[in-house]
Image (cartoon, rainbow, N blue to C red; front, side, top):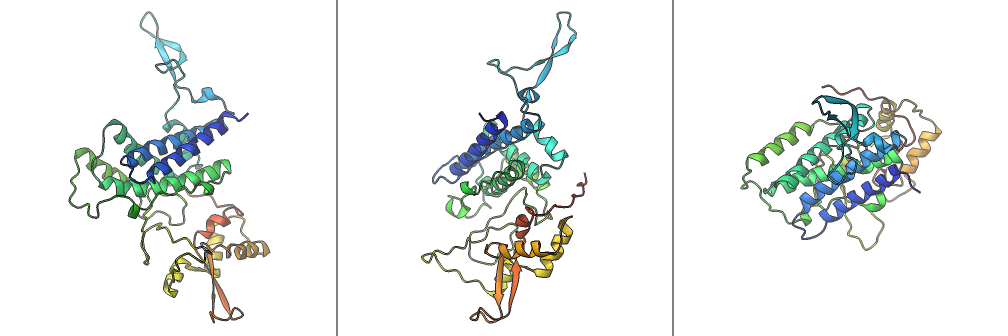
Length: 332
């Protein structure tokens, strides 16, 4: 029998999968609102799964307690479990199990800020509505970051990989979206949301961090400077469309050489050593075209001089083998 923490984890993953599938469903008119509602549901269950795992699966640790009024009008000293309309125990909202991991640096502050933005969007959808099509653009950026943050947290907290579920939002090019948003006017409520989002979305956030408040996505075959733009997926399928990259584009995709990668590792890890283990890991990663590439002096001669280049995302793989240095606390 699964523990309550594991049950909540499975339900959290199911909620996020449902959010992604509904968002990617063609011709679904309520996609943004549905994604926000289900994604927040997934995050709340995940945070509570973590809370129970840290509190020996004691469900009562999530219950809200309240005092009652005595017959003489004074407050009772004894606390009681707050009840819902049906009489079930009333559990804390997600802020309660969410703030502790942030304070203990078990949950990145950027991931929590992404949740706050999504909660605001969810509340607007549940309690009123947002009529501007511009919100669909912002949801794409917020949702892409949400899905990536969620998968990273599940892996870090519960050692569970979600790559099998393909938690990626459909690019906007496949969503019915007006090509020009300049003519749409925002009402008073809708003007507040972009300002709130901009206050949290740090333009100079660590580009190597696996967490973010928003993620920009471009769907075009051109060199892009967009933060966290998704790359074209490479494969060995002979029937797939061939895409040729220039030397400049390859260097942009793999900006680090061996020395730059090694310097980054010395800075990032407390137990890093440039030894046989490091070389074995580094060479093994070169088999993944997303993380590394080999350039030959004579492209037609595999025996010619060669040089290895790396994508910064290689650090995500190296994180599995080395201990990251403690991160300095963020300023208020």
